[in-house]
Length: 431
Image (cartoon, rainbow, N blue to C red; front, side, top):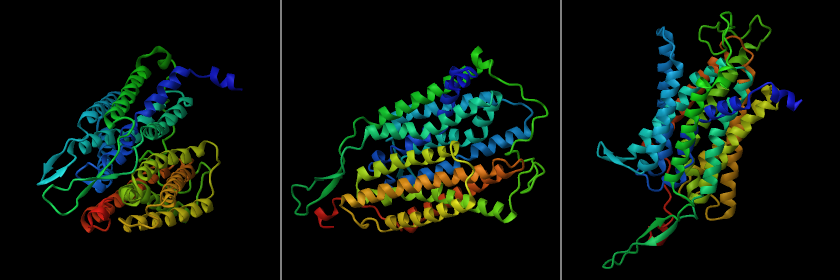
């Protein structure tokens, strides 16, 4: 059976499709898993994740512009747009390795301008990939779409695994910086060094993006890849995400869903994405860093792995029941409330300065990210058979929820000052 499956495909084309998919989100994920090392020195401090989440939302300008392009332009240059995006992402990550700590003043306030600007470029690649990269794989036999999706999943797994190897050293210590003529003791936090620097990490991510660019070139010029291309028939059925498809929750194809369930699942998707894409990443530093840099590092890396792994269960599990999604969403809401409570209690959350607290916060975040990933996958699976606009509406719900969560939390973090930083040396200085 296995030999028959392998004989029906070209493994080189599988590899090219996988590497092509890897370039979709690896830039954004790579920057995100470096936060435990960058957040201590960035002028934004612990609010840096909130700024990054907002930038990812603004990067949705890419899909909007592309949608307008294909609607009003008679020329189809998808291949060259992808070349440009992957090339820009590669250059951004390589430049980031040298400029990630560069800052400048904007409106009399210091900001990580290079980091945030270059992250916007990588986010533009990721956001546009959902409407450009995956649809482009329709030009090849359907069996290679799975390879692309595996590569897209690895775009989160590989950076997290490398970041685990990199480490953050140990938890922050304190250095005495008391002036010789002063009677007031003064200490500042000091972190130990990781196994290798963020510069090396970003060069590694840039190299993978370059390989993704070359893989896409290979898909378009290598004879073995060209032999696996298909000619799309003019009578091809309307794509599920096509905005011209009829908006219905009951179709003539046999797929049907009760009206109230149809809209209820869209609301559920919006709420889950409000938390998973907007709110929780913005306050992760406040909920984890009071327990130490090691806890924050493990949370970011392991939780980033848990989401894709949970979503990959869609390859093995049949369409989930709505009741199961209700239960998992309820658990997600409870755990999200607990995480928000920990963030609000910063700088003195419960079980601080104990291994139980570190274990608790890491475990809660892993379970929470896994549940959110599974619920997203489950809702998408339920709408996948819809020949109408079901998947289009799930995408709209995803973006609306994410945008509301990002804007709301950004205001709470930067203007309402609900969440407070933790200074591990405050008790030594008597503050």
